[in-house]
Length: 211
Ligand SMILES: [Zn+2]
Image: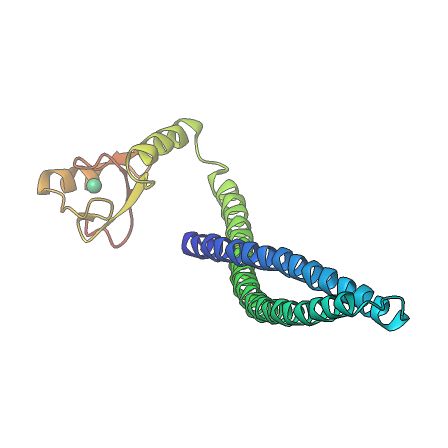
């Protein structure tokens, strides 16, 4: 999850960078567009004056024609610049679209991971609830004092408060009880609460205890 979030953040940065380039080029394009329009309008005005027949002096006519020719060259150059900007803009827009798509892919992956995790949590919660219910049923009838002792040991001993005695071994700490201990356990009445000498867990005597 952390790595997906880091990847998403990195892709988001990339996307912002591309977005900045696109915005800059869009501004550059509209400036270039305005430049072209200005030259085109001026050329049209000159052409109109030329066509109107109002200008008759040879020198003035020559100057007007020369200006129109110069404006034409200027317009050509500006249009070429504008075309270059448009090409760069198109490339940047494609790069931006690719960056956005990559970022969205990662976001989608993060979303489905999150959903899977939520589903797992829901399952775990249901399991906890079930185990809690089962435990509630099982502790009913257990003396409060014994339950308290069990909880205290459980808190101290990695969540295991009681262990079965199996083949002379405490299943909690895996150690074998010495013969004197075993003899005591053998002779104690069934209702005596036994404790392991080593780990202090409650020892549960069973037919497999080896007593
Ligand atoms: Zn033990």
